[in-house]
Every structure is written in structure tokens, then in C-alpha cells.
Image (cartoon, rainbow, N blue to C red; front, top):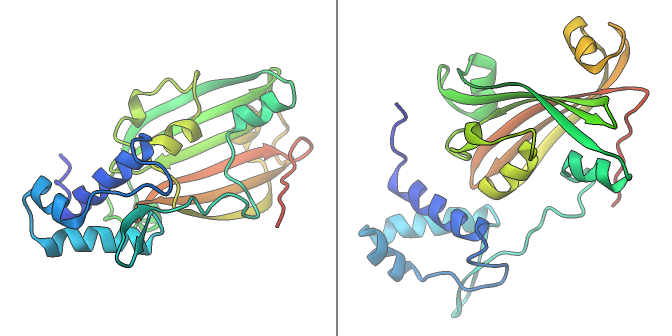
Length: 233
């Protein structure tokens, strides 16, 4: 059983959830700290910590003498854009399909726990999905998700929506770090991507954050002869 989050984190989750749902839009005023004190029945100090941390994370912005507002979304226009693979494929006029190979709950080993800033043995959600473009496998997505950021992750039908689509709503993107490298395909990855073992692949490893937490860690394998990453500054 998961421990209940500290109250300041519950307030942060509430504020982020209201923004993600569209109730509060970019540039809109959010409830005052005094209103949040009354709503949650906690001290002003606790509410102030939640608001202060979300301001530091650029989820909220404070304006002297005016109040606290939903901050502009900063992530658009970065060098590598977080895009939905289904949208990319459809934009090329092709058909996207997905085959879900795994969707389950597991305990974090030492390496994953360190990536998520959690204790070893903490519960994580896991999915393994092959994405197809016109029946050709173009991406193997191996993703781990923090249940605190996306509690309904295991309830989704990822043959109909992508993990990216779900996470953009349940865990609004705060930031991301990534690496891209060329690697030979191991036997199992090669089989799932319908290439020969040892074939060159482009591998994207991405770690995303939301509301001060690590939300997901994904490794995405792409057949080298089919993949290309682009960006602009």
C-alpha cells in the first residue's frame, strides 16, 4: 500500500490537476493562499510551500500585488519536442497502430529507483508497446511511470491512445532530459522491430518531470534505416 503524500504535496497535486483538466487556463488567476488555507484546513505556511514550489517549477507565476497565475507553458520550441508518435505518423498520411506487450505493476530495482528518486522496491507502472506505421514496426517503447503522477495508467487502453497522450493530461510536462545514441539491436528488441539482431538502431532515453516529481522514464528503440530525429532553435 502506498503511503499518503504530505499535505503540501496534495495541495500541489490538486493545483496541477486543476490546470491539467483545463479548469484553470494559462494566464488565469488561481485561488489565493488564504482560500487554499480554508479549503484544506491547513496552515498558511503549508500552502505557501506548495505555491512557492510550483512557482519555482514554473507551473505558477506570482505577480506582486496582483496574485498567483497559471504560468505560460515553456516547453514548446525546445530542441527536441515531446511529440505523440501517433500524431507524427498520421501527419505523414500513414496509419498508426500499437501492440501492447506488457502493462503491469513492478517493484523498482536500484537503477530505476535512482532514476525516479525513489526508494528501491517502490511501486512503478510498466508498459512495453510496439508502434506500427502501415504495419511496419517503427518504435519499441519501454516505459516506466510513477503511480503518484499517473494513478490511472494501468487502466488505459494503449491500443487506442498512446502513453504520451495520457501522460500529457495526467502529468503535465514540466521538463525533460534525454539522450540519443546508436546501438545494435539486442535479439529480443530486433525480433519485435522485425530487424536482424545487431542491426543499427537509434535509441532515445527520456526522463520527464511533472509537478516536482519524475513522472516517467522511457527507452524507445527505432530501426536505424527508418528513424530520423529533427528539431529547431
